[in-house]
Length: 110
Length: 116
Image 1 (spheres, chains in turn brown, yellow):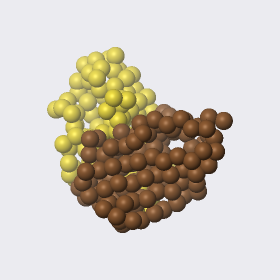
Image 2 (cartoon, rainbow over the protein chains, first blue to last red):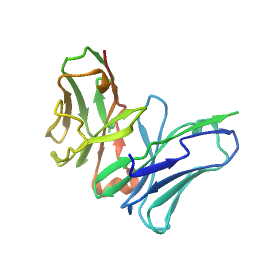
Image 3 (tube, rainbow over the protein chains, first blue to last red):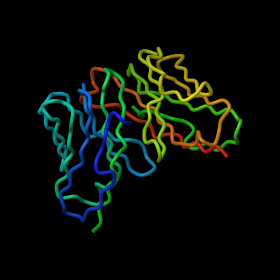
């Protein structure tokens, strides 16, 4: 969706390294969702952010939503091969309607 | 709960044939979404329902696509006639509005459609 831009499109990192994925909107977000998709499978919900400045963590994954609620970042600390997959940000641009960004493909090599 | 159940998991059909994809949402969820995922276009929202009523079908690509939700536990996405460019993975997702902040939208495993 052109309304949500993700960067980078792909990422290859060595195991143990930290990484950050960004999600940007030109419009104010009602809610920002982060999902992970393993190749050939469905989407797994990671976390959802609603308030400006909000930050949530799940295991080694931390997501933040900026004060203006137009940008979010997903940070993985000490990456592992199990973190590999496609990370998608989704947002309620208009209430109830969840659209997704283009995704970031993450590969983690030993 | 078994989660969102989609069938079939894989479908191969010939161009011009009718295709019906099925979805059983999680019991108690009041929203149901149909998405299509391709390498070129990513994950696109096709249509969504609230309490079985279609709210927004602006993402449905053409009149060849139609979706119904006759009751709270079942929805279909139909393509008639199918074309090779419809080949994609189709996902169904459901949610309960007041739980979405904690549990998000739950996705099914998808139906991989190939039109030859």
